[in-house]
Image (cartoon, rainbow, N blue to C red; front, side, top):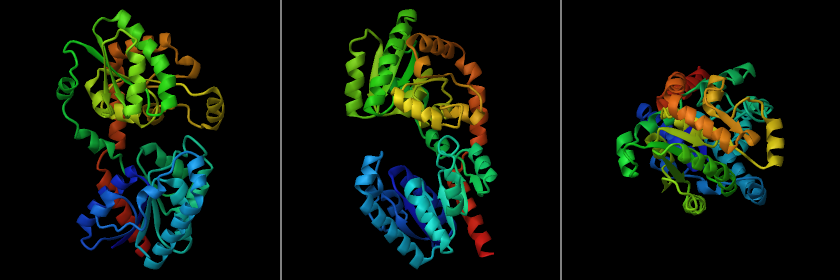
Length: 376
């Protein structure tokens, strides 16, 4: 069996390797060609180019490196066209992969794309390009398949790899001991994001909320994971001026959430992690005024927190922009600390069951079915 594969960043390399491992278990003569990182190399991929040459962010960096990126895509196209794999799978990196998939499919190759772009939230017109690019969209979340099917794009939900990953975390009691958390404390995990501007904006609100909570609850403790050393210094510069019971740790965001009683966090994948870890949460986010005006007009979803998107209703409080005030956050966090386990967790369990585990096996099943269909 020949599988073409292209992962443009570390997360895609991890996903691709887990799928390749499962396919190799089923097809002992699996061959791989394409681009990937160390994890895919362990599965036998000799990468056409170093994967990190594709890891570009924002708007300026891709434009500066456009000639190189176009050259890499041309070479990847020629490689796959000459090799003629049974299927080509682009993993994430939609701006790069969807064009490549479209070119290969136009030449008669079978193509699939793993990890749906957020067409259900931004730029829904992209689905027309996707329709020409892929024979199958492999979605991580169940509601995504309906969006594609309505647009005539075959799609299947393969579950989310987080389901299995989070099961590998140590028990909650072990983590509380590791972080030195007081035995009788109510612990609030506070996750202000990973970017400098994001942390600066959110810690201004979060720190005031923390001060409010500490003045009203003597046994509350705050646990803040910092994304990197720069963010840690940035967070500690704020917290050191406050008389709070607070622990700042490096990384370990998932561990911090699991060790807590509730979570105050920005939007993003962390909201899905908190949901799967069964931690009650409050979502609060602010961005610069102009960015908000632009993005809010582009958005087609009512919610930003993934539990709410999945449920299509506000299960988790979302306080955005002007609504994200310390007084409002204080009230919502207090309520969630008191009633969150009762009100949020049963819904989280239902949503997790809808997503389901078995990501590698379900993805391999979908690819095997696709290739059988094309051969037949």
